[in-house]
Each structure stands twice: as structure tokens, then as C-alpha cells.
Image 1 (cartoon, rainbow, N blue to C red):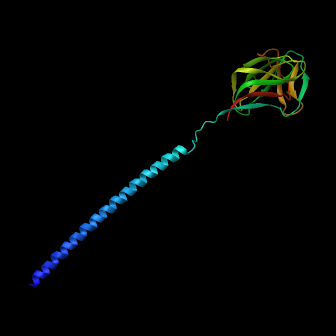
Image 2: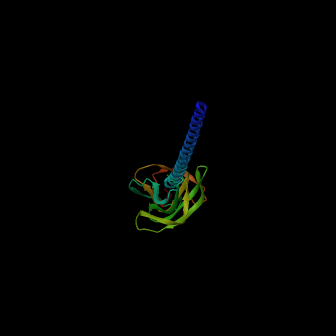
Image 3: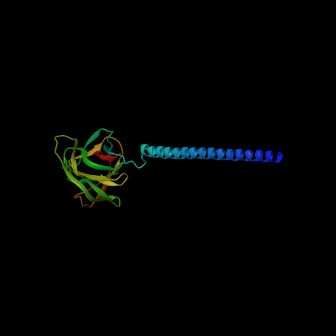
Length: 206
């Protein structure tokens, strides 16, 4: 009689134990599934946030828009009316402070011709642009439109040239080496220095 009771209790306990294990396993499975769903949801949310952040973040490769700009020489000083009266071409060095597409060049003079030349080993070189300024009764800022625009690179040496009765110079500022020649093709001869002044208008990058 006692043996049967022991066996019955053992089976009941075993049944209860098995049932408890199954419940625990089922509960653990539910928790695992829920946790897995949370992890997946979190991953999806993080990926979405990362995508949105990448869309909203500014690009480091943004190209600056071109803007109207001005460059020149000795423009902070009063112009000086100096006469040449020789019919020669006068040339002086010019290096842009930044890249510029030149659309207009002005000199303080009373008419004549102007131009932009390349540099040839420290001397005026080949012609990049040449134009004729309108004649005026007295010296003033006059110039020529450059079409199509002429690209000049920052820091690169060029030469500005003029053929006029009045030199485009200022009362102060930087003294530039001066050359003259009977034609744009030379031969170029240095004659000293001059505080040449000029205005260049155009478009710069940024």
C-alpha cells in the first residue's frame, strides 16, 4: 500500500515537474520571440534614423555658387594723370588674387587700347585679349567688355598692357616693373617702375 502511494506521489510530482518545465520553456520561448521582435524593431528604427540623418546631413562636396566679383591694382589710391604721348605699348605684371572669369577691364585713362598677355619667362608673352577703349576728353575710368569671358587663374602671372596718351597710374600703392614696346609682339624693353592701377570685373567661384 505504501509503495503504491510513493509511486503515485512520484508520478504526480513528475507530471507536475514536466508540466512546469513545459510552461517554463513556453514562457521562455515567448520571451525570446518578444525580445527578438524588439531587437528587429530597434535595428529597423536605427537604420531608418541613419538613413534620415544621411539625407539631412550637408554634403562636404558641395560646390560653391559663382558670384560677381572684382579684382584690381592700387584701386585704394587716387589716380594720377600721367602722360605717355609715345604711341608705345606699356606693360606691367598682374596676378589675380583668386580665380576669375573676367567680363570687363577698366583703366584710368583717356581712351586707347588695352590687353591681357601671358607671361613668357618674366616678359610679356602672347595675347589673350585685346580691346579698344572709348576716347574721353579727360582721364577717367573707362574700359572694354570681355566677350567671351576670359579665365585667369589665381596667383598665375599675366601682363596688362595699354596703348594710350594717358597712363593708368595711381598716386600711391605698389610699384610694378614697366616694359614698353612698339607692338604687342615686342621687343619689350624695361623702363623702370610705375604704380599702375586697374579694375577687373567678372565672376569668381564662391
